[in-house]
Each structure stands twice: as C-alpha cells, then as structure tokens.
Length: 246
Ligand code: SAH
Image 1: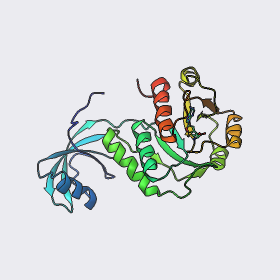
Image 2: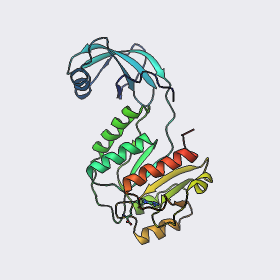
Image 3: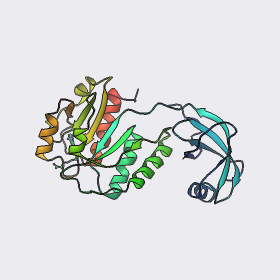
C-alpha cells in the first residue's frame, strides 16, 4: 500500500477536519505530542476522525496542556467502513487488549465480545477496549476506528443475528482441513467470524451453532490454537481469500 507521511505521528480525534479549522488537542494527546514526542511549533502530524480522511496538520502551539494545530491538507480520502463483523469470547485483560488490537489491524469493522459458557470474564471495561481500538487504528493507519460493541451473550447474539449475514464459526471440533474452499464460496456475501474462549465452545454451543442455516464452520488446521492465535489466523485467511487483501 503506498504510504505517505509514514514517519509522522497519527492521531485520532473526534473534531471535524476541514480547511481553516483551527484545532486544539485535549490534555492527554497534548502531553503525548509535546512532552513524549517533544513536538514543537512547526512540526507536523497526521490526523483522522473516521469521516474526513487523513489530514496533515502543523503545530501552531506546543503547550503540554493544549497543543494547537492548523490543518495543512488532506493526504488521503476517507475509506469506506469495513463490513467484517468479528465476534470473540473475551479473554483476560492483557490478552484481551491484544485481541482487540489484532482485530483492528486485521480489518474488522465491528468488534463484538460474546459471552459463551466457558468465557472466563463477565464484565468488560468498554472504554479500555475502545482505547485499544483507537491506539491500534492510529498505529496501523486505518482511517476509521472500528465499532466496539458492548458484550452480549451467545444466546442474545443468535436471537438477533441478521438473516442476510453468514457467520463463520472457527470450530475447534471440525476435522482438520483448509478453509480456502469453504471461504471462497462466501465471496461477495456479508460475513462475520466467531472465535471461542480459552476453554472452547461447549458441545451444546457447537451443536446449536452448527445447526443454524447462516453458520459456516471452518477448521483452522490440525492444531488447537490459543484463542488469540485463532483470532489472527481466522481473520488472515478470511481477508486473504474473500476480504480486503487484494
Ligand atoms: N483450549 C480448547 C480449545 C479452545 S481454542 C481445547 O483444548 O479444547 C479457542 C478457540 O479458538 C476455539 O473455540 C475456536 O474458536 C478457535 N480454534 C482454535 N483452534 C482451532 C482449530 N484448529 N480450528 C478451528 N478453530 C480453532
């Protein structure tokens, strides 16, 4: 992918990005730019807000409490949102941070924690998940932060699943095989992918899911992957075969 301004810091902000709009950053981002990165007046950064593409901005004020910026020019048009739905049974703290970041890097558009029978956590700190998604979006140069949904039980998920979307089930009980052909048949369709918890899906959950018309079970090979490995492996094969790795 042609990269421009790769060396500049990238920051997600919520404000509109339009020519002539002076911007002032909040305390946290100001501290990061002025103190941590020691940016001063005249230095440049890249800003994005998920709506207006990527903009080159220049510091006009470098106060550690409120950095002021002027917008120079748009350097990338806004990309369309990813329609790839990613559901996963949340893991414990630092591995949860990891999974959120990998889902963003792998191009998920919606990130949905799903509470299954063997899921080890029940309450999630939503703002922490969103902060991880923003940090990953800044780092991997996407122009939009994926939607991070509040956690939902598997039952609720099934009850509300849209009929027009296929759900790819990473099923550790599936006989080892390559998912290339199965995934190839989903080309052009709305899809989601669901990864189970450390303890895997319960037998009842697997049976229930596999009986649903919109569920497409896949194997991720002959070895049992850790849930966070499975997340990256599943998203990689999906993006490579029918996703945006084109
Ligand atoms: N530790 C459990 C397995 C859980 S792995 C056990 O030993 O039974 C966590 C999740 O990763 C699974 O629920 C599944 O969604 C996915 N996964 C891991 N290995 C897989 C494989 N070989 N094929 C398909 N999915 C896999």
